[in-house]
Amino acid sequence: MSKNSLRTITIPAGIGDQLWLWSKLQNAGEKFNIRMPDGQPQRGHQVCELLPNLVSSFEYVPKLGYKKLSDGNIQNKKNEWKKINEKEFFLSANSWLESGKRIEGFLPDLPTSYTLDFATSEEDKMAVASLLSQKKHYIGIYTSAYSNARHQHYNGWGPDEWLQFCKLLYSQDQDVDFVIIGAKYDEDLAELLMAQLKASDIPFTNTIGEPLSMVVEILKRLKYFVGFPSGLSIINEMLGKDGVMFYGHKVAGLINTWADPERIKAGNIKECLFCDPARIFDWIKNDYQLFKKLL
Picture 1: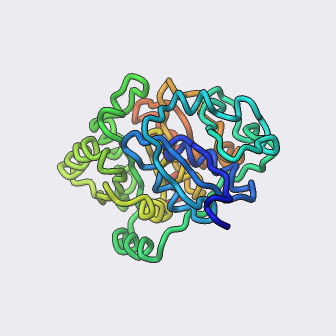
Picture 2: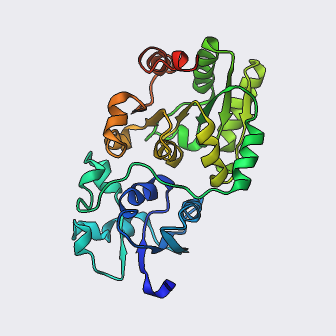
């Protein structure tokens, strides 16, 4: 099937924003040409590259802002997939989920899949197997960039809170090795944390800047993942891997709207606002019982 015979969808550029759409569109029985806003840091293409069975081509569109995409969202006018017969259109699930509505009700005539099959390479798998080769309890940490973490909309953790959290986990299990994950964009806060971990003699593995295909394989090898609100936490859940995803007040409506309801109920995924490190540690230890699971 040629590129020109396929439909073209313009979607948000964020990793998580795309993954919510793919949880529905993977059941549409189509392959698509994808267009995305060209704003930095331009990570969206990495998702497209991992979904060759769903994406035929992708491109960034200059001067396409989030508001224009949201206002033009075809789901505002046509709430079922069978009604969308346009050759080209905008599509976003963000407003639907941010209002607290469940993903199943977005384009409800399409089934919802809570997992995705990411097409990583054998080279990715081998590289990660070498990187995380010790018999350690690898726990992933995603801090985001300092400007994001301290933004008033998120009120997220800085290096001191992350260090306190890591110290609490490490005090329970000295086989823990913290895997610090993120793009080069996230390096400033991650570097601050890693310096403090080193000074505290707490083991960690630096994977900042690795391509998303490798990050997928890294997530598969983790025992647990704790992250800033981001696409990485959503990928982790779509791999069926357990973890905590923090949110800020501005996006609190997203909590428990998109993951498998059974996994939410079982505590496999914990979605909550940023809180005191000791509080979420207490939940991980006593409610989720991570350290018993690591035995």
